[in-house]
Image (cartoon, rainbow, N blue to C red; front, side, top):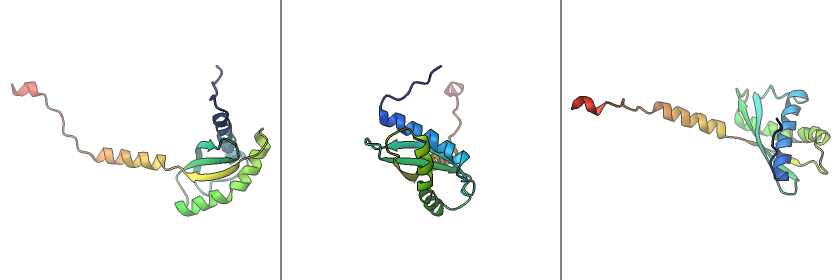
Length: 127
């Protein structure tokens, strides 16, 4: 079954960049000293010059601020590998951003689990 691609070119290129970055992280750049990093989404400007890459970290090995600095320092290396794999005229500048969605959802789940909901009683029993 053929996967249907997003209609807009920016969406297709962003999706391709996300896949390539994941491959780069597993083949060429060792990120294990930071934790288990996944690229959650990529958005790209209409002129395809700047790509915003959102990443999340499971089991982080270092604090968030140094981790963000480390990811930003690796942008040029990722861009170099991306340029070899991406088939467009210009290789976009990569800007890495920590994706707080996973942290936010864990926080919501923990808050919801702390709510004490009384058991529903059957009102027909009291009649």
